[in-house]
Length: 265
Image (cartoon, rainbow, N blue to C red):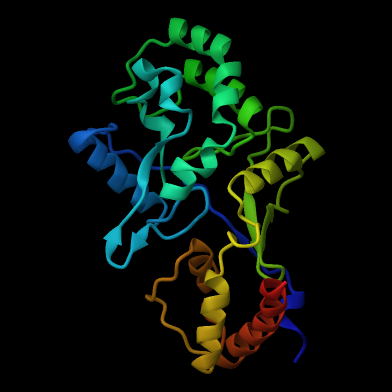
């Protein structure tokens, strides 16, 4: 049998665009905050929108509502801004995303003044990015080069949505090959990947390596409802759905050999 991993085994990290219910109150605190958190968890299938880790420890949910543009920039308008909130794990929210935060907020003071003078709402029940927010987000993204969630980022010059794929064969996250990105786009996406240390030794997920090892031990069988600590396993399961057991086993054996070398190094 030819090597199955010579095929294009790139997993598409999906967009996490929530579908707000206009009959539900959303916000940052109390019951509206609980409603928004529940929706965002549903949207990401209970995974961090930045590193894709499962937001569950044993049987208890973990993670936080996370302000895409830090609320400290303009607490009056950004704290309750619904499109400005995503769901993230504690490490991404309280550590990795904060790298460079002080500098970028200092550099955004002029943009903040313009935003504060123009914005016409207090953020509550606004479920779309208004023009004032879009202008602030544009300036924020120039400074941060972070793919803000939940609505993502579109390249200023290319007009291409910034998307990420997971390269199964090389066990790393990469800019999506489905888009015609410029060098500027690729640099932005790679900066985001580095910001959240998605490919760093000691930080990169081993969830798929654990899954393929379990499949090998079960002679090509796996449980579709069994949870693993990263969303990429769910995406991989979707891709192999319908594949016969022998082929699944062979594929996992080939991935396991490659992953063993990668994680050993």
